[in-house]
Every structure is written in C-alpha cells, then in structure tokens.
Image (tube, rainbow, N blue to C red; front, side, top):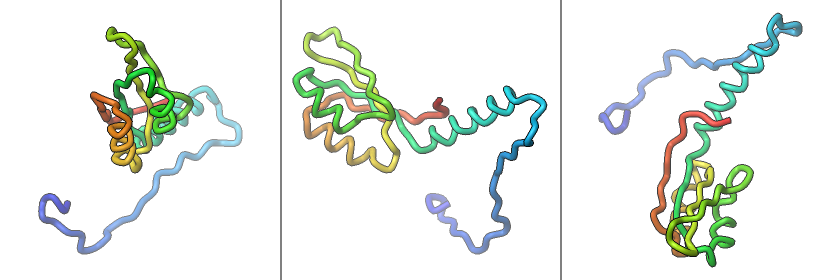
Length: 118
C-alpha cells in the first residue's frame, strides 16, 4: 500500500484461518495431507533459500553462518577446492547473513523465495 501512496484508514474485518479436525475423522490420511501442505506453506513464508559458492577451506566458518534447518546441502564445484552451499535461512536474518558470508569471502550469493517446504 505504501508504495502506491495509500494508507489504511480503518479495519473493516479481521479474520483468522483455523484448521479443525474431528475427533474421529473418516479419512485421517486426507486430514494429515492437508495439514502437512498448510505447514509447508507456513514454513516457506518464514524462510528463503540462500545459495553461494565458497572455498573448501572456509566451509566450516560458512556453515556456522548458514546451518540450515537440519544441515546445509554442499555440492562440489567443477573448480577444485570450491563448493556450492544451499541452506534455508529465516527471512528476517538474510541481510545480515549475506553480509557475513561476503565477509568470509563467499561468492555468487543468491537468495531464492520459497513457495512451499516440507
């Protein structure tokens, strides 16, 4: 709204989505599937995917900066002693993370928005 020069003058409706499950669902697998999909969208709204290249000697430092949800994905590059790293980072931390990565000589730092995650 701000970018378009608009401002809020009143709240017409406040709402909240709630997923309610029956105590005895007739199709538990379907309920679990829907809940999993919703959790995936919510997780994707919290995170971005950070990808970068770094010399293998500096990998331990970089992994401390981008530990990921479980662990970063590390792939060997065609250039000897260099690796590509992919890691999920919380959106609100990404600017500082990029600064730290650049400070430890990471290159080709990319930030990719996520639509879903499981």
